[in-house]
Length: 470
Ligand code: NDP
Image 1 (cartoon, rainbow, N blue to C red):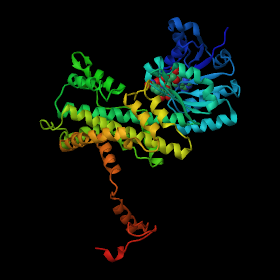
Image 2 (cartoon, rainbow, N blue to C red; image 1 turned 180 degrees about the vertical axis):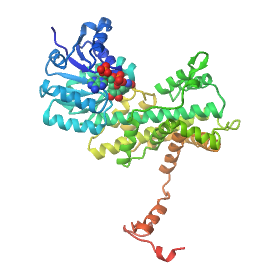
Image 3 (cartoon, protein in one colour; image 1 turned 90 degrees about the vertical axis):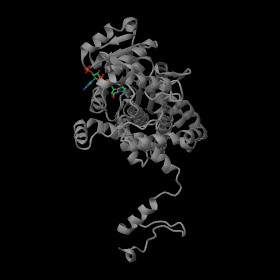
Image 4 (cartoon, helix red, strand yellow; image 1 turned 120 degrees about the vertical axis):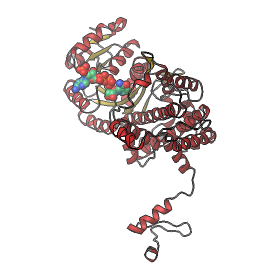
């Protein structure tokens, strides 16, 4: 039997769709799944693509079905499952065979697996894949990490199956070892933030302006034809317009959001890097708060519900759109600065403009703004998006609206944690003389940590605190 070009393990939501995508692009693919009946069903329902799919029932059969040097994609849950799968494959594979972990691995695990692979084999790539089921089937965004030579070996397949932005494949090698999974984690952090800001705007329209779900859907649909054009705004229009038994679907869904941890990883890594990403942090915090339903119910029983109607005319739809534009730019500015900090700290040389490009299509955060972000980052990657002339100009127009919306939210009990985190960060980043002089004075007072002065050179200077105790 003709050997397969590539193999795939894990025919769940993502793996099955990725396998069909690979077969559709003309590659012969061998597949294996822990539960054998899933493999049989997958092959039996593959239609005209079945002739390029080789179902196998043992790992040995999978390996034998692939032409050496072999490439095997893992699409299984992140964590121990990936380690177990690599351990099970190792004795069956040659040293120059290549295993690709395409799940949502923590980049520290990918770093460790890359180091282990360098000693024990087989070769190893960590690959972030975004786009959900639909993306996996018809074109995801792909962020690779590992040895460039290994990436180049599989690049033709990955570029073929990836999303295309004006014909350009959204599949890029980001750097060594865990770089691809790190970029994917930041993508997911930005995704959390985009979703949270949309949810906050939805809340302002629902509770502040008294709008029904369908009308809110119409607003999102209109925004999707302007500067906010994006997959997440598009699907927010669709979900707001959807009904169930005559009722808006949104009105019957519990306000308790789940998470798989990639947003949390992003926030933890940002702290390690001292990289400020307050909009993403606020979004992760908001998901955690959403999960505490009983505590929120207890809070409402004691204090009454917070959200009140906004005074007539205080917040308009146009103002909300501008606030969302500002919030989005500020959130992405933080995300790219975190990537820059990681790049420097880990010596990765991350290609920031290419990252913006790879996110333009296929992935969950795809949006028209990313094309302009790529251009701005290419002009000067070190400058940051906030200071890029194109985005600085947009921020000058949109931040007054963000301020008005956040102020109205605060005045009328409408929680807007992500939008307000963006605004505070913006205000801090445009304030040359902030308030950390007070922090330094306090630190020196209680711990003799020292400070620098504006009017004298030198570090480690101290204040005359003893003489001023009250
Ligand atoms: P699913 O739960 O749909 O599928 C999981 C697959 O892994 C199944 O084929 C399952 O086999 C297999 N599997 C589970 N446990 C084991 C095990 N112990 N040993 C061997 N195989 C096992 O997951 P998804 O397809 O949604 O996700 C796969 C990966 O892709 C995850 O890392 C996820 O975070 C990531 N991802 C998911 C996205 C999504 O939108 N769903 C988007 C981007 C990335 P079995 O049939 O036997 O249970």
